[in-house]
Length: 73
Image (cartoon, rainbow, N blue to C red; front, side):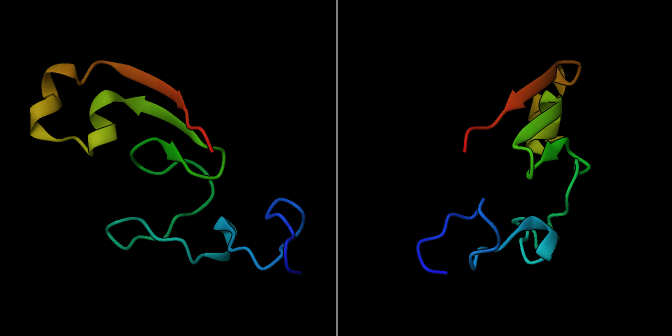
């Protein structure tokens, strides 16, 4: 239905459980936390600082830092 918000039924919106959302590397986004600590459905990140950068070499001095982030919508 035109003009219907995504949170009020399907309304033509694509939802995470539909299986059509993909990450930048082409992996399917699914409900729950991914391997790096992101939960896209609940807009939360819970993991290590280096996990936000997929364990990049440059962030290793901060690998023991833990983050909990509430992402805004």
